[in-house]
Length: 143
Image (cartoon, rainbow, N blue to C red):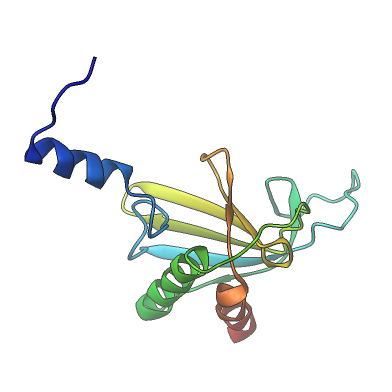
């Protein structure tokens, strides 16, 4: 059985079903943002109690305190998700970003080598280009 949809229904459907451009839902102007360099190839030992993100050892982390810099990083991540990228079958996340906007928290693992990104809680990987890698690396080199 088919039901005829009026104009208001089409507006609702189009706003709910739009997948492009890709973005991290609700993340535009983060109140806080930290970038991480990870060591996915490091073999964990019982003696290592250092910081980890989803079990991966953290090599370095930098809190990005400048509001414009935080916005630029999120913008570059969004642009990287919207560029042509073919995810590889590997998964080597060498970077991570944790952000907070309002009451929402975000954690993203980035595998630029494999053209893949994982946002905690989504349960799926997203394709991502190398575009944001330079911005992440620059933020890690700042301090």
